[in-house]
Image (cartoon, rainbow, N blue to C red; front, side):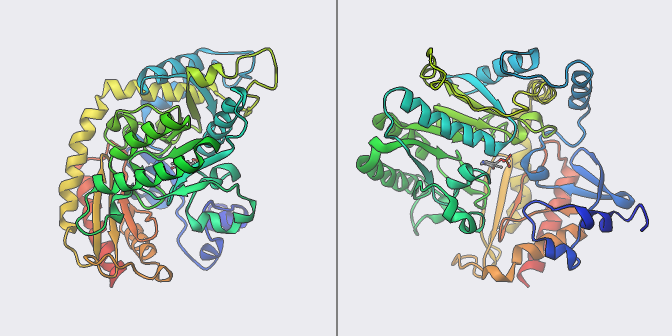
Length: 448
Ligand SMILES: *Cc1c(COP(=O)(O)O)cnc(C)c1O
């Protein structure tokens, strides 16, 4: 075997995530990436591919961003890893200070884990345990939104409502209450997004009225249900949810793992509703897309529910790499870039450029919706666009778009038949124009 035959070597040993490996054994493309450069991936043979999905929504300022890369290098030769029980270090402390200062008011404590699903596990366990420590052990039920996604570990998958990921493992899952999503795509004819949000909140109110005393927490993805197809909702829902949680003593968990760090136009999505959750999960973009890290921010009240002489009342959850210094250093450098480069303001300009480029898809007979929230723009394909009649899923139209775009140097990875742009914030006008052109031809290839 030729040592540079990467495809053969890859298929001999790797098991790729979220992938039917048989597709690759049958010849589906497998891109061997050699390096990254801004919004671009450089593959074998120097082939350049525009990363329109920020490598699974992690990358913020471009691949191999030099300021974050050197912060990591400096930290690695200073302190690479240390136990975080009984020990602390500057990157973990400074990052926690910065996160608390930047987060919605009221969140004052930071608990570290190392990936998004683990952060969701932490938030759910913390909520249940805080109620229990407060003398309320009967709150053992979670509420989640239909079509929501919170990760793939058993607990996080348990509050996920995407059948493709959940169905197989259903016998292993806890049984949360799923409530209607405020998803504006589901508006009845003539209904506004704000009405839809009110109607979904009414259903939540009805559930809380029946079972409020047994509910530990409501978990939501604020503003955008990303894995559920970039479905977006009116912030009014979050305000009503906040009021209802307060009235019934239920914790509100904001899963900002995908929407945090500027994706929706504000640093955190909750800001646009003017609310503070009781627990907030962060990951993905937290390190600028360089290192695995997650954080759960909690209120002082939740934190204090665990303070006691007894060990059992403590939160005994841990991960070996909790608060890894290199990951924290990357996250600190990434947060500094938000200020240095005035990222939120610049993203406003980027987002409006994305909107102008996407205007061409409005009115296409196979486009049911073009929607945008800040730096996330989604185009939903349908057999009948105006009638919103979907294609049969077995036709895998989105997959056709993916293959077509990849051939033309763009990484578009649709969610079902929803094509979306969620690029690194550094994407320039030329790259955006290429993205729009390739998306247009990918749509034609998919609907043909
Ligand atoms: C990606 C994601 C997760 C899971 O994060 P991982 O790091 O992939 O485990 C949880 N919630 C939301 C909203 C996500 O988008």
